[in-house]
Image (cartoon, rainbow, N blue to C red):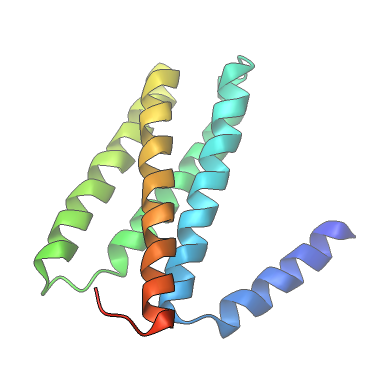
Length: 127
């Protein structure tokens, strides 16, 4: 029952979000799924961590697909997302918790940065 309510809330949230807010939701979900994978890995349940790790890769691929490649920054982000997607593949194969921590640090940094960007945009200030 609780999951159904959460799913409905998320559906409304996604349907009413601006492109910037959608990106924020993707970063939030990336961090959440990587945390879940990290917890499972720390408990020695690497087999069960594969699903959230694949979900994390899927989120990175989604972020890659949203980039407008006419900007230099988009090219740089594409390379970063690609690199970290490959890191996740390595984590899946080698069960490397340290590498997963690096990916998680990247995701948390991007989430924090994106929150700041949205605050600046909402306040009407320029970057």
